[in-house]
Image (cartoon, rainbow, N blue to C red):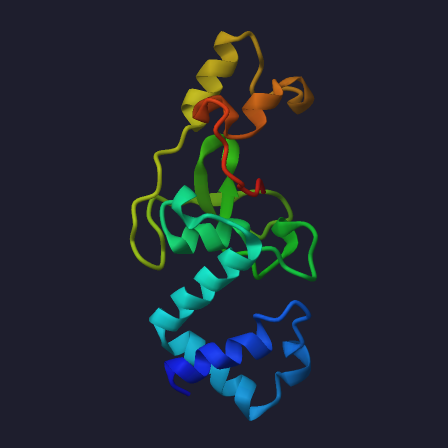
Length: 169
């Protein structure tokens, strides 16, 4: 399969509102489509860009296309992203921090500093600043989460209310 054929197949397998590719997994065409996506970085990036358009996500709000895709990916089978083996990157909005999930039954992750696909530097974590600001306001950052001011549960506290559409995991 070449790149033009891949883009045509995308509309059949992944670009349609009612994705039916689970019925086609055993077909030669789907196999070629899947293999091409694995083997061609340009088409993989194109695929992720198409998905972001469909999800109405602006990739410019993220360090790179790959982090935009991973931070917004939602599995159709798992409501909790921490339980989904297809979720490869955790994005914690309140810290502006990316990581690789540790599948231990909780919400642990290994923080990463660069995109694993393209090497783009990720933002410096705001975790320590988050803790300092909450303590300065008289809140226990490790206490009852419900007592933490709402703006500190998202990017609002460091973006001055200008929060793009981001998925908090």
